[in-house]
Each structure stands twice: as C-alpha cells, then as structure tokens.
Image (cartoon, rainbow, N blue to C red; front, side, top):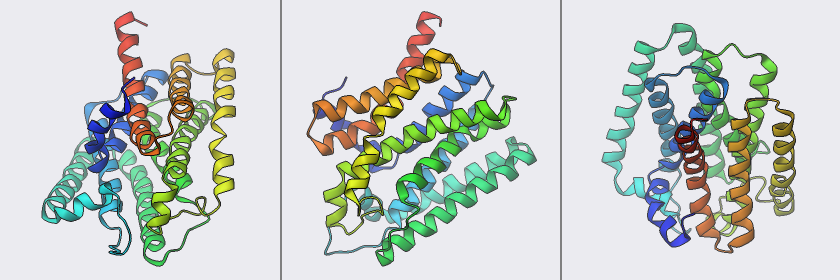
Length: 283
C-alpha cells in the first residue's frame, strides 16, 4: 500500500482526468475475464478515450467564479485551452473513426444511446453549475450509473450470458462506483461548499453519511454472493478487495485530501494487481 505522501505523486492523473479512464479500462478487463468474453484492443481504446472526453469536458466547461476557490483538476485545462481543444477534438475524431471502422453497425447504434446519456448528463451538470441548482437525480448516482454502463457495454454485447447474470454484474459495478462517488462527495464537502458546488446529496449531509455507511452491508452481501458461487468468484474477489480498501481508508486516515487521491488509485491499481497475481499463479 502506498503511503499518502507517495500517492500525491500520482495526483497528475486526477488533474488531467486520467484516473476515470484507467478505472473504466481496469473494470472492463475484470468483467471480460469474469464472464469469459473476448474483447479487442480497440474496445479498450474506445472506452478509455470516451471516458476521458466526458470527464475532461465536464471539468473544462465548469463556469469560472473568481470569488470562489477552484480545485486544481478544474483549473488545469483552463490554463492550456488551445492544447485542451486540440487533444479533445482529436480524441473525438479518433474514437469516432475507430467506432465506424471496427464496431458492428448494431453495436455502434447501441453506443449512441450511451452517448446520449452522457450528453444529457453533461447538460444537466452545466445547468447545475451555472444556476446553483442541484438535481434530485443527484450527480453521484448519475456518475455511477453511466460509468458502470460504459464498463459493461462491450462485454455485454460480446457475451451470451442471461439477463440475470448481466444484471448482477451491472449492480455490482454500480454499487462499487457509487461507493466511490459517495465517499468522494463526503470527503470533499468543505471544498465543494466553498465553491458553491454542493450536490443534492451534499446539501443533505445526514443522508449522504447514511448512504456512505452502505459500504458495510455491501461488503457483507458481496461475501454472501461469493460463498453462494453466484457468478465467477474472481469478480467478487475484486469487488471485496476494493471495498475493503475503502473501509481501510476510512478507518486509518483522517487526511480527507489524501483519501480523495488514494481512492481513485485503488479502484484501478487493485483490480489490475489482482489480475497480475492470478496470471502469475495460473488461476
């Protein structure tokens, strides 16, 4: 486990919105291994770039309010606007070209639905930021839902698993990402309050705290499903390992900024490390 001093060396990943793509790629890999589907490099490339485009656009387009503090991850693209525009539009054209050339027409059309969800979420985020409005369809749930759907999109399309198994995979990922979003909202409450960027849940701190506590029953449910051998056990091992890591952060650190930087690292480093161990041991 990296000490928080070393964790901060990885803060550039968060500053440049690279942590979210890494998380999405790692968990798509976990799902691919768990349900034994066969994905190609372009599936990971399209997912990773798409997630970066969504996250970076959201952070770049947040309105400037000089009287309020701004987190570094919201400022860094503003300082390099020309470079950001160049990279963003180049990335968009590249994945559009890849999608047209490599994806089946049916898969491409299904992907437009997911794109529409991302676009609607982007519009709602901008509306919230500009007018100080916090939707009751709170951003924590929206982010967890869209990111989990994105991670599962290609594996779902390439597999013949039944609806029950697919739904279980989605719920597991959704809950994992929701735990991440809820914990980050709790740890960043003071920062978001100073920026006048509180979500609907953050404006109800008692409700937010109660939902954050949900990670404990979630860990118990994962153990029960693991013992029942409901799906491939490696999926539950990954889920339980990441949840245990979040519990560790809560118990053994009071540095909220350190926890904020560490949680996203854990969400992609832990699954990839476990996959590496499985490969070495031949599991």
